[in-house]
Length: 73
Image: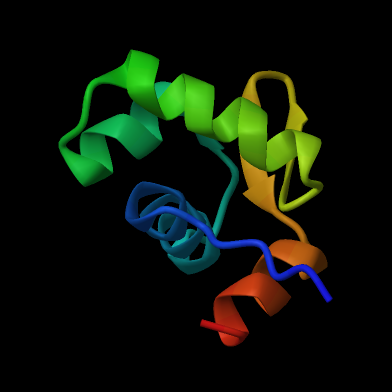
């Protein structure tokens, strides 16, 4: 069985989204983590392809699959 390994940054993004009471923009995530927005944007796209986050109106939320991935860490 293949186990997907998330990078430390991807884990941090998921934790940030998980702890937020509302969806966050890429810039909001970047500011909370103190990391360049372009780097966050690329990771959010990858997490979206994996169905770990959803995007609506340029705001991101963690999915159940994303929460489960955090629990498995």
